[in-house]
Image 1 (cartoon, helix red, strand yellow):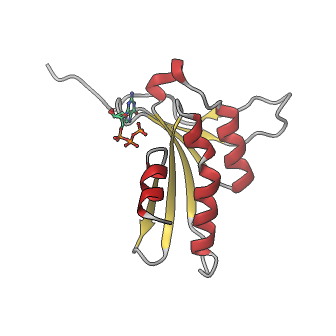
Image 2 (tube, helix red, strand yellow):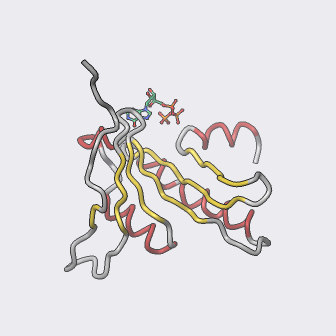
Length: 133
Ligand SMILES: Nc1nc2c(ncn2[C@@H]2O[C@H](COP(=O)(O)OP(=O)(O)OP(=O)(O)O)[C@@H](O)[C@H]2O)c(=O)[nH]1
């Protein structure tokens, strides 16, 4: 991939590899819930992750992170799409706001897309911000 391709893709997704630099133990796939293109780019990024780790004995744990949940009114990526992608690939599922510090883990335990509840919030929304007076 050329530098310019890397730059342009980086505008839509943050990918973070956790590990010692040679064999990643964990990967965060971070997209913007208000930018559908950033979600669509995940397929390509995940393909790259699989390619890089195909010769490794252990596969990295992958977490899908939807950022900017403080902009819920501007959301363009539905929660069920996020969860389906997690379930299909065995990712853990997270929603965060880098701005407010909110974070939620939403289990991707969808059984039947039409009849069952879509998701279960494991830890309720909370802010890591506080005011000291
Ligand atoms: N409202 C909100 N804004 C955010 C959040 N995270 C980042 N931003 C804002 O998004 C803009 C871009 O942030 P960067 O950290 O530069 O990310 P980027 O990937 O270069 O840019 P984007 O593609 O726009 O996300 C900045 O103005 C940030 O303040 C968030 O969780 N909520």
